[in-house]
Length: 468
Image 1 (cartoon, one colour):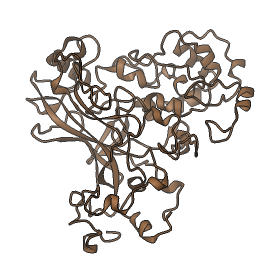
Image 2: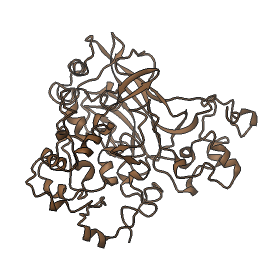
Image 3: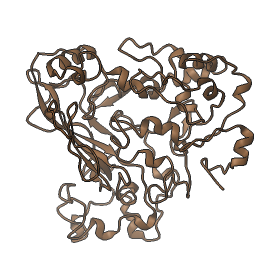
Image 4: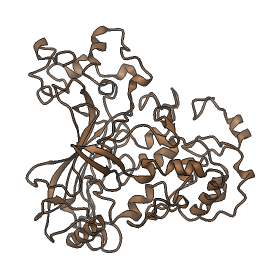
């Protein structure tokens, strides 16, 4: 019986190696760390201190990665900036600044409680969150990255190994405040997916771990999220494993010049779990009992967070993408009467380097400084935060202080939109989009919105000239 890693290791071999199995977990212990680690280990930093005795160079390498810095130097819309999760504005929980103990519960470190966190101190690295093989390691949801109390840290440290989907999913499946909330194509269903969910990671198929595609060298993990690294170009392409012309029909292969593989092979995302599609912060503060629930069983209103909409089996939005993106930069001027694109793909019909890609589109309505016309980074968590006092003025003032930005004392709410690339939940080939799914009277493509005069199947003159 083949489980977990596609190397084909069996339960018997796992027992010999001392692997701990838990629901949703399969990983291998690298070596008998119990021989070297005798404890006591009563805190995360104590575990790291033990790791550093042998792995100081690994720590030095890790501290150069965006998983540690949550920021990277990049060029966005002609500006050279240092940008990432640490200082970007989104239309989910809006901003990390001032909300660190809650947001940084997903950071691979210990103690990032405010802007004074020491990124140069290797003792702050959380090795266990990525290398636990027992399935028992867990961070405190509001503890600035510290582990929850009561878990056996010595046992976990003695059984570290290669990261599995479980380790990566601990954060990436639950971003934005819950399971499936943010990405749409990453959620807990991807931990042990069936082929109908994802052919690459399916446990009854290829059974890939994340690093099968996200190749990793010296802790540098290939691939960059467009929403936090819009200026990045380290994208993972299907062509690394598949030929550029994989189809038997030339007509299908010709599509590859214009259409990304993901467009046809990921016809839907959020296949099993609903994902959030909109978030309106302007409606917070109302006492509604009971809180409304939609047909998917998801709450559509929360006093602390406002109104939401959700979707399941969502057909992507399609847009041209040339591998780079634009973004709203914190502190930039915005027009409250227009929808601000917080992140968006670049490329158009005339861009020969662009292809049509699938995206999850998330819309929002969020707080901005109505005198300066800049988006506010509100403090919502902790003392003085909106979730405590329900005072937007106070939340705005404290949040902007944390970001080092001015605040006029006046605020309003403005519409925003974000585009999230869809790369996971690849369907079995028999479920890929067919001709009439995109073309014809009921096709899902907005041809004119993409820059065509009309459906190129109706008139060859409408098609984009090859290579132009």
